[in-house]
Image 1 (cartoon, rainbow, N blue to C red):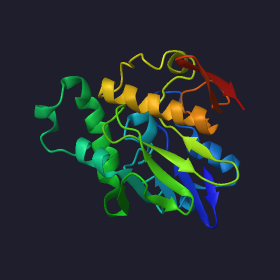
Image 2 (image 1 turned 90 degrees about the horizontal axis):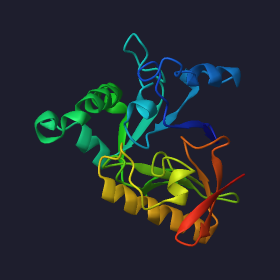
Image 3 (image 1 turned 30 degrees about the vertical axis):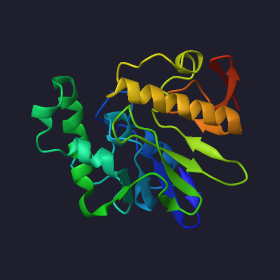
Image 4 (image 1 turned 180 degrees about the horizontal axis):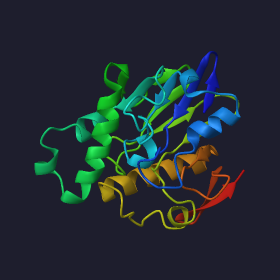
Length: 220
C-alpha cells in the first residue's frame, strides 16, 4: 500500500480466498493499520494471476475494494479477455483465464488500461516487463528513495539472481520473460535501484549487485 496525498494505492490485491487456504489476509492486515477496504482509491495490477488479482471480489461476488479505480495493462486485458482464449491457448492456461476473467470483468467501468510510461499518480509510472504474462508490468516510484515494484518479473531472489538465464515454469512466454528479467536486473544493478519482489525472501526489498554474469540480492 502506498499513500500519495489523499490516495491509498494497492499494487495488486493478493489472492483473497481464490488461491490458497492460508492466504487472503490483506484486507484484515490493512484494518490493523486503520485502513478499511472502502478507503482504497486505486488498485494497480502487475498481472492477472490469481495470487495477484484474486481478491478483487469477495465471496458474495461484490468488489472487495468498492471505491477504487483499477489499472491493468492493455496487453494483459486483451490477452485474458480474448473470447477465443480456449481455442487459441494451451489447456494449462484455461484455469488461469477463468480467474483472470472473473477479476477483470468484475471491475467493469472502473478499469483504466495502461501502457509503458503511463503514470498512476505523479512519480508512479508503469514499466513494461512482459513474459510472465504477456502484459505483465512493474511499477516504478521515483523520488528521494526510488523503488521498482517488480511483481513477478523476477520470481525468486535466490534462483533468478544467481541464474538469470534460467526459465521459470509459470512464465507464459519463457524467452520474453527471460529477456525482461535480464533487462530489469541489469538496470537495477547499474542504477543501484531498490527493488521489491512479491515472492522473495523476507523482507523482499533490496538491491541487485552484479557478480560476473549473475547478480547477488542484497536485502535492505
